[in-house]
Length: 174
Image (cartoon, rainbow, N blue to C red; front, side):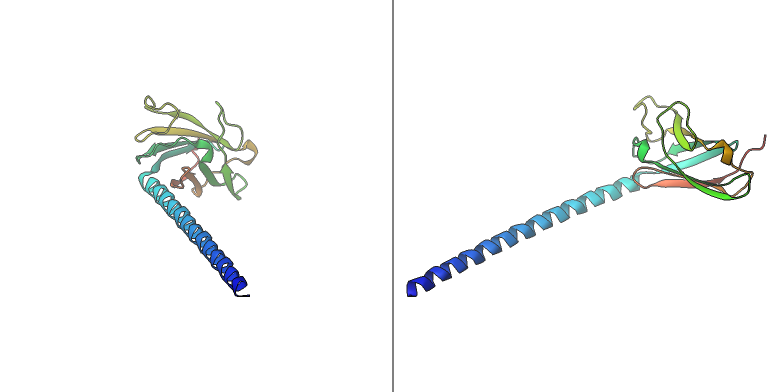
């Protein structure tokens, strides 16, 4: 009967040691994953601090909007499908519209899309919006819901990492 107690104690101690080993390794794994996440978050924040885009000019005739952007930061921008372009405008019937305009890789934009018309001084990395370059984007709205003559028209352009610029614009009367 005494030998059975010793075996039970040895099994209990082995189970406790195994459980503490599993918990310790799990804790180390969680700390490792958490520290990797923290490092990645800091790298993303540092990239955001080095990114800066600036809207120089916005021209519209009511359907087509031309936006001139400058990359004044030190980060290259190339994932255009992840850029956000939001246009808030007053249409010809004087109602306010807010529209998220998706990127389209084409030569002429379809309605309610935008394309890159050109990037100036684009010799180093063709097709990439490098620092100190100017990018001209062309936004085409629906001709049935065109921009009216209002000073409340607004545009927001945001890079894939969340840094952006916005500004008001007016329709040029011809």
